[in-house]
Structures are given as C-alpha cells and as structure tokens.
Length: 177
Image (cartoon, rainbow, N blue to C red; front, top):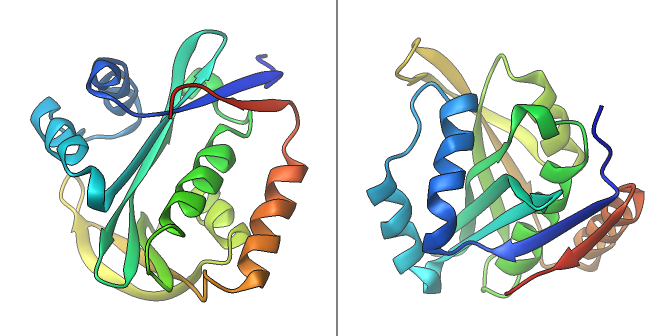
C-alpha cells in the first residue's frame, strides 16, 4: 500500500493534461476531452486547477470555476492506486483557498448520489445537500446530489481549512504556482 509521505501540489498547466486525462479515463465513465481542459486552462481569471504529484507522478487533480459570486467545483479526481492518501483533501483545500482570492461567498458541486465516499469528504469541508439533479449523469441516468458550502469568506471556514490541512498525514509542498 502506498503512503502519503510527500505530496507536491502545482497549478495545472497544458503539459499536465495528458496525465490528467489518463486519471479521468480510470475514474470517470465520460472523461473530459483534451480540448475541454485546454479551454478551462485558458480561462485562468475564472478558473482554478491544481495537480498533485506523489512519488514523482501526477496522482490527482482538482479544479473550480468562478461564476459571479460563487465557486463551482468542476472535478476532483485521484488515481485509483493513490486513493486514500489524503490527495483529494489536499486538492480541495488548495482549490478552496484559491477561490477565496475571488469575491465569492459560497461553493457548490454535484456528486453522484451513490458516491458516499466523496459526499463524506465534501461534508468534512462544510458542504451540505441542497437538492437533486435528476438523471444528471448521462452514462447511467444517475441523479446528482447538489451540495453547497456557504459563508466561505468567514473566519470559521478558514479555521476549518486549517484543521483539515493539519489532520492530513505526510507533507505537502508547492511546486510551480
């Protein structure tokens, strides 16, 4: 079993897209295309994306888009062999902190109703269920649970992020930002 002794986070660049798509193909039934990633990365003013390296390889990525006064988590994914190492937590902390640089008050996301592991992670960050998007996932017509995390600019949210970061075992460093 892998251990999360050392994780490096870095702002996602075009050179990372091939590795990110490789992870996508393993964890999503309908992965994004290369062109979608390139378009997302061109919109740096309203997008936040990071990759996580473990043992020199990209082991996960995550990102969000800024829409008016809210952040929308677009994706958090970890290579199957690196799951359970705290990589998703690290990525979500980084995405939240970067989104705080924008004048937003809340974050939102959709998650499969069957994905209890991801829902547990999001609840840890303060997300709460707010509704259902029926048939949202086209591959099997599964519903999506809509979750919201409000008041992210308040000191309590910053304290929560600090607590989560402190609870993650191993070290996290920053590569190129």
